[in-house]
Image (cartoon, rainbow, N blue to C red):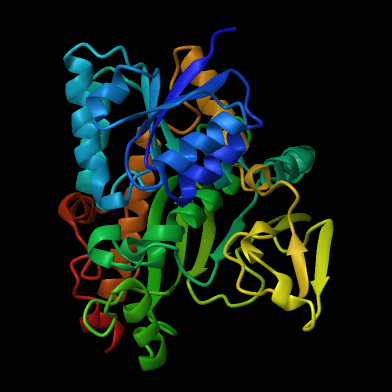
Length: 414
């Protein structure tokens, strides 16, 4: 079978996590990396783990000429410009077959639409990386409950939560570069997961039609003077002037177009979860049955007492975003696989080798961006918005949240 040669644009935290996942993926290799900070270390890791013999290139065009598919892992504010360079390189003759983009596809609906247009204009296969929809814990639970659904009916309520203590990088804290705060960063996961869980078996991933959105964005921890000072000292970001939300909760209503049934997805996300580390929690309720996934319930755990805590070199080797180095701690023996990174990569590889878009394509990424921006709009307006209203749909096309404009102080401190 053929091997798909991947080129990475971006060599930060998420790129390294996906490289770990690649160790469990067949029929692909890492052949090119954009030469920026961390690229040499990523190339070294790839070689040591037999993921390929990647070479470093200092232009997007060169990468397009030395791989089959590009994976965009670079910061949110760079992605549209990179996609423009990719499209130009392909039109100039680069033999690129496809492009993968880590969530979010765009910081606004307008950006996401341009990403779709550029990819399709260059006749590229597309894949939108949204790892949580590929989590085996979720999909195995759904498969187990399909017989019950055929008898009793589908889920009517899904809830999804992702929380940790905050991002690793300075640009992630800056709403003008990231595109917002925790809603933009992690709300896209939770909204998409709710829709995925609620979707009836055998239906397309956009089968359920979004009809209403309500949302609340808040700044509960990182707006306090003590923590604002920490952010400014560590990352150079001033939340007294340009804050982003660190907590969001909302409800999206979907309609089954065949039956007219309304179902609800509740999402909650925060950058203020100071317990063991990253927490993913999803559950769903149907008539007579239910499911639940909790990432902090692990088959393995460790205990570190006070006396031994000084010997802990890196708590994140046990759990992503870990904030503790002692006590009773959860341990994931295969974190990349648990979070769905392995499965989403294999899906992209297999799909592109077949000459097809991935399970989640750029159009799906655009749809998710639209729902995230609808959540920001609902929070700003302080009301439930009708997603079927033509005027709301038109407003979303050019909408940019106040928080992403750097005006978050006007609504988060009021």
